[in-house]
Length: 260
Image (cartoon, helix red, strand yellow):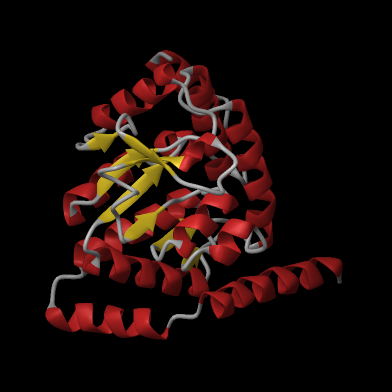
């Protein structure tokens, strides 16, 4: 996909449009699909998430901010943290992935629901073009049990040995299995009712570009021992089910307000 087409797509979206930011993300995903990075199934999944973002008022909630702080604490204290990347994540937040890796040294593993060697290579090249190093592609993998998709194949040097797995836009069966294996599983999911959201250790109910920008900013500014202690206390007191209930409450209020 050429820069000319990217610019042409952006020109079609007026900055005066009330949903300008959301439409730009759609354009990025269309470009990612045309480049063979995102899948058609990923485009559908993104649209489903947008519906829930409407109910959040298309903004980051206080509960999402708290969950992001907890996720940051887990990443900073992990023995071995891995960021699991799919096509949508690679398309939407490659720069943020590179920044997060630079700040905390997290490994990055490509793990796809609809994999192919060609698509995996395209994603790896795309990530490296944006400054991501140490991209694991699952070439040397272990197959996890009780997962019905190819996402069961995890890299021996990545997700398999990690104690903390950060998997934005995850699928539920793998999130559940990884949690049952004793791993801390963190996700970004706009749907607080999904299996992923319910079975993960920490769920950031937010749009992925907002969530990753917030996480990068937080990780970059947590330098003092006092700040780290504060995050660790927050991590110890975090209850993901209560976190999800806070998101339900926001969405219900929005529906009630709209129905008046």
